[in-house]
Structure formats: structure tokens, C-alpha cells
Amino acid sequence: MKIVYSPNYYADIGHHVFPMQKYKLVLEKLIENGLILKSCIVEPESIDLSSLLLVHTQKYIDKLKMENLSYEEELILELPYSKELFKAFKYACGGTTLAGRHALEQAVGINVGGGFHHAFSDHGEGFCMLNDIAVCVMVLKKERKIKRSLIFDCDLHQGNGTASIFTKDNDVFTYSIHQEKVYPLFKEKSTLDVNLSNGTSDDEYLSIIDSDILWIIDEFKPDFIVYVAGADPYKDDQLGALELTMNGLMKRDEIVFETAKRFSIPIVVVLGGGYAYKIDDTIQIHYNTIKKALEIFR
Picture 1 (cartoon, rainbow, N blue to C red):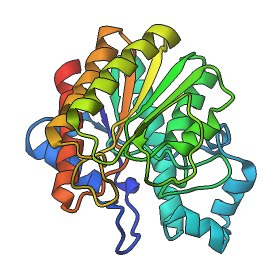
Picture 2 (picture 1 turned 30 degrees about the vertical axis):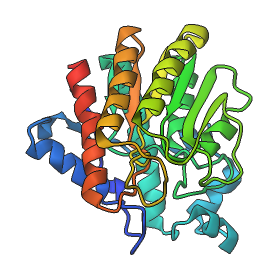
Picture 3 (picture 1 turned 60 degrees about the vertical axis):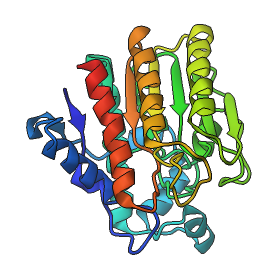
């Protein structure tokens, strides 16, 4: 089974809560434990400009190319701009789009990266410069490979950028289950938002996930799913206050993958956020997600 990864996903952002080295560490763990062979790894190309412009404005892309972000724009991005960082996000978009193509070929596509759901069409926010999720969907829609997409976002934070981008697109269902009292303080309107109270634990969370994905598929009838498998609902995440365990997050992954397989809907998984106090915990959660995908779809 093909796995998408590029060393270009990494950029040096100095001492930062966002562990950009996690992608390499997750891949190394997958190889070391024998879950994948090096021959399974497919490196994406950097996304092309025409694909980016399906989602992002020319003005915003020009600012990124010319290193011309204002102080305020860099402040809300919450990352220090560099050409290397712009390159990393272009590769993330290329990676998720390639993984989307793999999903259409082999039922599941896996990007060991991606999930940058806070990027809007005209600006970046919250560690997200470009929205790889939206780029993947828009490219495949333009090519008429998919018609109706479900973006099933299980990150700690609301996918505000994705919600905004698709707010008028009736062929894209944006679902976001997230902690209510956390960034972004002003939340966009997804097709369906589930706002969780601080302290939400495994049982309540999994009950909601299990119920929601079934009725959404029944009512909306998607032919493609993007699953944002955030590691940050974890109980020991630095930025959150939910109480999900590693086992609970693994069960979440199982529910989503098993449901996609049951209804024969191609699914692409991206990693999303993860800011555990111990980086090894974040790596383990992402590793578990990919392991579960491989178990279910092999």
C-alpha cells in the first residue's frame, strides 16, 4: 500500500509548540516496526500554482511568493515566514492531493502530514499557511473524479479555514468536532459543528462520532472523505482540555475507517494537529492512526 511522505514537509521554525519534525518521526516509527517498507513511500511533488488558485487568492499567493506578509498577517499565522516554510506547505498540498488520488485507487490514501485546516482563501492562521484539505478536494472535483465530499475533521480545533472556503459549496459537507473554549475564539460555520465541553472523555466523544458519521453518509451520500485525524484531543495535549486517551483516539480512527470501508467510500487521512507535552505521545497517536488504516484496508 502506498504511503505519501516528503522530507520537504519540514521547515526550521525554531523553538515552537508546533513540532514539524513529527512527520519524519512518525514515518521512521512505521518503518522500524515493520508496518511499511521503504518501497511503499511515494514522494509528492510541490503543488502547482493553478491548483493553489482553485482555493487561494492570487493576491495572497503573490504575498507569499514575494515574502510580503504584513506583521499582522504573520502574527495570526503564528509561524515565522520563510521561503522554506512556504515550500513545506506547497509540498503538504501536493502530498494530500496525491494521497487523495491513492484513495481513489486503493480505497484509502495516507499522507504522513497535512491537515492545515485554519488556512483561509486569502490568509493563513493558526500554524496553517495553505489549506491542503481544500486543495485536494478542489483539484479532484475539477478533474471530475469526485462529486460530493465529506471533510470529517476530528482535530481539537475547529476547521475554520476549511469551513469558510466551502461555505457556499453544497457538494462539500464540512464536519468539525472540536473543543468549544479554545482557538479559534471566533468560529466559522461548518455544515455541522460539534462543540465539546472541557473534560469530554472517550465514551461521549466516540458515541457522537459513531452516530454522526453514519447519518451524514446516509443523508449527504459522499463519494469521497477527507479525515483530519488530529492527535490533539488527547488528554495530555498542551493546547487542549479534552480528556481522550490513546485508546479512545484509536477507537475513533477505527470507527471512521471501518465506516468508510463499509460504505465503499474512498478516504484520505491527514494528520492534523498534535502538541502533547511529550512528543513521543504525539508520534504514537499518529502512528496508531496509520496502523489502524493499514489494518483495515490491507
